[in-house]
Amino acid sequence: MIVTTALAVGASSATASFQPPFQVKDAEMPISVDVCHAAPLYVDYDGDGKKELLVGQFGEGKVRIYRNEGTNKAPKFKGFAWFQAGGAVASVPAG
Image (cartoon, rainbow, N blue to C red; front, side):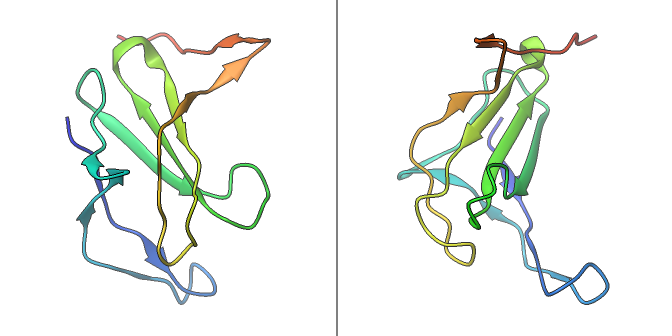
């Protein structure tokens, strides 16, 4: 499953407009999850002012965190880390 997303840009949800969908890349390769049914979320996860890409995947119920090495308008992702809780990779039951 290749991740494709549309980003909303604007000052608030009332004024946001969606941009055309595009294929999200990790370095130069399209982001692909282990098992289909990816659930991407573009959000400032760590409070640094830059939005990261979180990608939930149906397989094993895990979430990948892609840190933004670019800007919010021109994000760049290189590698991911699994979402963790209590020092271990976290997951939610699937099925």
